[in-house]
Image 1 (spheres, rainbow over the protein chains, first blue to last red):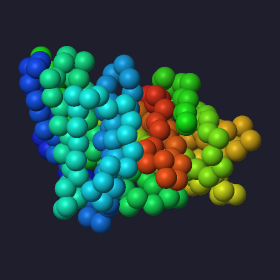
Image 2 (image 1 turned 60 degrees about the vertical axis):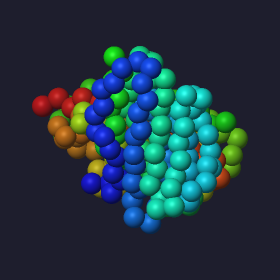
Image 3 (image 1 turned 45 degrees about the vertical axis):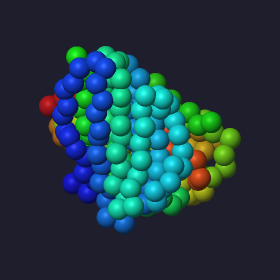
Length: 115
Length: 114
């Protein structure tokens, strides 16, 4: 158990819909990262938050947005869903430092299926 | 920008034998960290081992060791005495200070044969 909690574990929805994925980081971790893992694109970095503020942005679509709340949990919002958005979405947390403390602790992922 | 290359999409190893999973990286930064993660079929990502760019000795964690060759920009994972439970996908990743994200390779699927 990594200590990172993601909900829901599985989600099936239709094209055009909107979903929200939730992540609670490990106790004490200030950084939250979102990654998308699809079969044809590997593990793609979406966005990072550190203590409530956006720190880094990757290949995140404009239809996607995220935020980190004062209690450090984070939400990833996916809207106008397309078939290609079907993927495993990981949340990870870290202390936020460098060196070995840069290791990521991953949640179990939220598997999104868009029909 | 950082780039991780894992050239072995799939590998097979006999139980109890050692196996090396290749990873090469590219970065212009002098300070960076290299990580290996394991993803079993159940889907979760598990941290295995870390190597810092200034570490003079290769990292070891139990049956895992990292063969770090800085001049060649390689960070190969060596798994000794393979077990059936080692069958999984393995990802090499890099992180540089203040970059935020970790960059991952495409992964190598390891199958351990009994």
